[in-house]
Amino acid sequence: MLLAAAKHLARTRNFAGTVHLIFQPAEEMGKAGALKMIEEGLFERFPCDAVFALHNFALDQVGAFALNASALMASSNTFRITLHGSGTHASLPHTGIDPVAAVIDLGQQLQTLVAKNINSLERALLAVTQIQGSDAPNVIPDSAWLGGTVRTFSLDALDKLEAALRRTAEHIALAHGCTADVQFRRASPPVINHEKEAAFAAEVMREIVGDEAVDTQYPGVLAAEDFAHMLRVRPGCYAFLGNGAGDHRLPGHGNGPCLLHNRSYDFNDQIIPIGASYFVRLAETWLAA
Image (cartoon, rainbow, N blue to C red; front, side, top):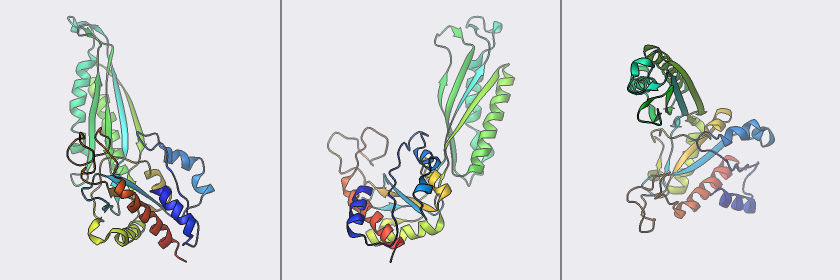
């Protein structure tokens, strides 16, 4: 989409100003390619008044746009908590300190933290997705660990959940006679659109696909995107472009919507000209002579 827009803009030059086309690398799993670009002087070398981005998404209508004027995607954070006890044979639990039992207890308590700490009107998520104890069925290990992810739409909620996680880990460990080592990594902040730029983007979208195909009140999703870093230093808007319900896929793929990050995903080539047209009109309108 961006390459097609670049080709058209370079050929027609129907704008008064400068357009920078940013091909953002390493945006998955906290690799933070956007942050690295910023740290290495992206906006000093290529000044921008505003930044805009698109991501295809599992919207049933091909070429429909979805956005909002606030948090469109969540922060992405990972944690790993190791509880240290004292290993022994499983038949002699009284001679050691069992970190596996402590980790099981901790995992159950962590699942309650969102409800206990976050207002029910605000969406957040804490999921325990990993747990590891002994490699042998008859051994109580010296340590055990669990890990998972935390997603929030605000940094305030993230601060509360991290503090609660650390506090809970410490006290559960103490109750079991263990010690806790907490690693909490803030991989990406929430994607928070700017109101003025979101309204501008929506008007351009309507020009491309019509009013009915533009949803400006799309609820935020708990997935993450490190374009969030760019929106923290420049005003702008991130939006979704509908990839369709999956009808374009060849036989043998899964049924239902064409969700991202699964083995039956297939990019819908029909949306390439739509996304390219959006970028072209965005630049031409923003930089109107």
